[in-house]
Image 1 (cartoon, chains in turn yellow, blue, cyan, green):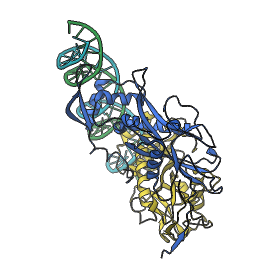
Image 2 (tube, chains in turn brown, yellow, green, orange):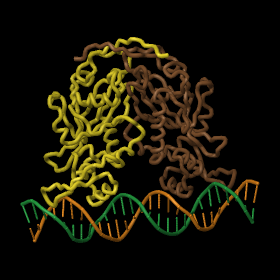
Image 3 (cartoon, chains in turn green, brown, blue, orange):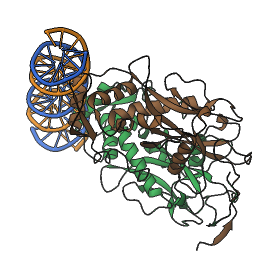
Image 4 (cartoon, chains in turn green, red, yellow, blue):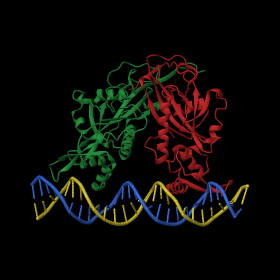
Length: 251
Length: 251
DNA sequence: CCAAAAGTGTTGGAGGTACACCCATGA
DNA sequence: TCATGGGTGTACCTCCAACACTTTTGG
């Protein structure tokens, strides 16, 4: 039915950032990348902003460009596991939330045929500080999500899509706690929403909304400091099950 | 900068779903499958039900089981194109709506390592009738989505997820027109919603909701027949752009 | 006491549900 | 004429945005 054909294809060096032997030439390879979001308080301004880690490519194509952390899919691991693994290898992070974003497979997105299964993840602010201890400090850096440079491949587009998903999902799920420590004040939670949605929220209405949603458990502790002490809350982990669809796995 | 090399792509004659020689053992291959929804009016009952086409497998694994239509990803086509192609090859259908669903890649979902990029699609009721003219009538059949047999691989799970997405998406987008002809009455549109959501909707409130959404354009024609003639509507195609995220392609 | 953030109350509008009610046709 | 679905009006309820107001701390 289909006969064997010869194809001439301009091919550059292998794609893998990091190690890996040269791959076979005639197959489409599967890569896994992750858009990792965290929050950082800018020293100058007093508001939080979304940041994400990028790795500098050390080889062609797009050598010296910044790219999403990722790697090749191993034959013996699931997609979710590959996302966690490559994420840990390149940045040393363990995400508090991880979800598949999309599979990108345009033929010209890389010189060789690569299908990228892209995940997106959230890491807590405190965790992202301790990350990348020995992981080439040089080649991993955090960027403000709003002002990214030109990235390798179609990664700018991918980040845009991940941002869109994050902004959507924060509206109808309670994933914001993936960016916060175990306990937090309502003001801190509101700041997270404001950073993601890029607009101010009414503190009074925000309080009632999250209180009525039943996803927060008040503790008896308070955050003291500047003014009137604010109650600390924890997330109710029993809720979030029903929010997701019938996809068993991914944690 | 980029050096040109020659690559020999042994296209193991294969790929399309039925045929196929044994694949290489050490690579993970990429398949593309599609969950295709359409509507069928059951002869006995008077209400619409969701149906989808399945193909009977002719070889192991899961020989003689029913499976989602699909095939191997070709090296020279995008994921979207592969979904359209395999969908046409196996069922002869051209979908009125096509969207990527999810990438499934558990290691044990197939004896050999296969990552399936799954799409879901809608085809209009009338189109689904004329389908599969010469496409092995024997090995393609339509099933009620609610009462599927045990399918090959993890395809039952996949259909469940596709149904979940469809039911969600019908609530906040206007994809239902993908199951209807060019013009239709509000009652017909409501029936589509009822079939997808599996519950009755108030005709009066349904009318106002879709009218206020601005997605319908009334024509000056009417569907006559049983009782008082019902006005025919068309969909306003200018709207649906803003509904989707920043994913350029897939039409 | 004052500033500022924590937390509460109140109002009005938007949108959804339930349901009563007219309208127009085939039989 | 009647039965049936097409189409309209309306009351009510819930949720949300706006904003006035009280409470509690640090300085």
